[in-house]
Amino acid sequence: MKLLRRILWILPLFAVAGQAATVAAGTLLELRLRQNLSSYSSKQGQAIRADLIAPVRVDGHTLLPQGSLLSGTLTEVKRIGWGVRNLRASMRLTFDTIALPDGTTQALKAHVASVDNARETVDESGKIVGIRATAPMGHRLAGVTRNIFMWDPLLQLVLTGSTAAVLRFPEAEISFPAGTEMFLALTAPLEVDTTWSTPLPRLTDDAADRERLLSIVHNMTVRTHREKNSRPGDFVNLILLGEPDWIERAFTAAGWIHADKLTKSSGWMSFRAVAEAKPYPRAPMSGMLLDEKPAIFQFSKALNSYSKRHHLRVFDQPEAWNRHPVLAASSTQDIAVTFSFSKNRLIHVVDRNIDNERAKIVNDLAFTGCVDSAELIERPWVPQSTQNYTGELLATDGAVAVLEINPCRTPLRTLDPGPPMRVSGGRLQRLGRQVMLTAGNDFTFNNPIYQAGKGIQFLFRRMLGREDRTQPARTGLVERSQRSTDIAPAAPTASLPD
Image (cartoon, rainbow, N blue to C red; front, side, top):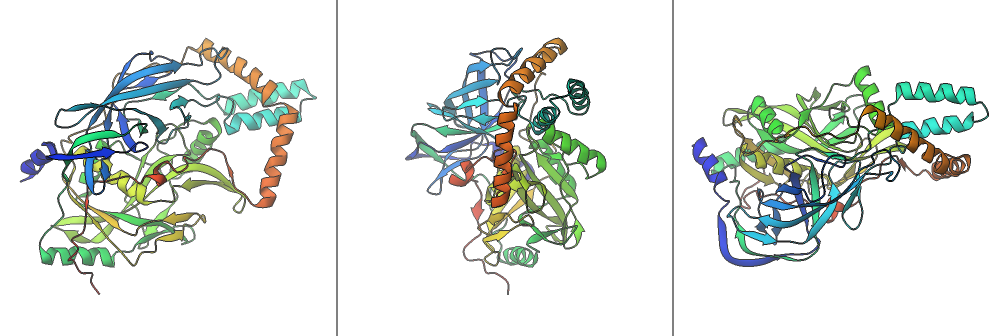
């Protein structure tokens, strides 16, 4: 039976001919790169490929199924090098062909809209622009300190040396390993001649089993609470049916990793990640409890920025389904780091549309082939708008995605990092670049007049009670077009327990 299910999943999602439809311009396609890319060593004209990891659905029909392959070219790439000609790295990826699971190919016109969880930005033309190496918080604070003591060259030298010993100069070249995810925006309509059926069946069609499933959902606590002060945290928006080691293998196959425990050491690493604009994919999460119990798993998926990541916590539950454990999970996506004036500390900002993260996890796990069945079950008793413990607004439709996980011993798709790629120059070049960029920064952005203006702006924002984001959030990209999934809602005839 398990082999049959796997074969049915591999077989091309059952195309239905004769139902031509249009994917409108502006539609976002969620991709995962198949190869490493680097502004330092990748060459213009290099072929690129990426998998479509989220289905594109229009009016209830899947027009572009998960697993479609997109091909294109690296049409532009600039590296920083010695920091003389370019202060920022950049690259432009042009995807022009999509191959559907039945082997048909179509031309498309699109440009990159954003890179998921990246410190890099994307301009309106689709060019990916790297960070300025002198922009991270640590380097800026060091510059302010040097300005304060500009009258004493010896003290400036000591401060420069001590800062360099504690905080490293960030590597600002763009480096995207295989598995990097991004959003592509269609710039012209895409006509498709085939629609595709839903690959994931419902959990059960048995009336008694369905009543039992709804009872489990109805009786489950819907929200976590912070361990320190019992303030309300994240919503439980996923239920995972299967053994814990199955679930661990499924998330590993999808590119998720375990988060570190919160210690003094991991706290220091988190500070350095913010100050140096460096990645810390295993960054710890704040302690959350569900039914007064801590999470058994804390999974995270990031790229190269501490400020942005997908993450979830998985909790044990007392119930069982088909003799396997039932586990509850709460998930959100961090999209920025903000200095909270009300709390006088840095906090993470989350994507307020938390249903996006629910769909993200469903798509990630389905893409591995480690999900046998899935269903979206409504919970009308869950508030659709509320706040978390930091005061941020959260919006949801209240539904919970229930996934039946298989043993996942041989995933259909796993992330292959590929051969290593050189992402920066040698030590001499890095030192020379640091000197050149620091000198240029001190002349333009770190002079006393500019810093005085920034200080006045900071005080003004504080008087008005506005938050100060140290990293720009990805504004509205997915909120405008919520992630699609190929899972069906619960059967409309199902009744909720009293």
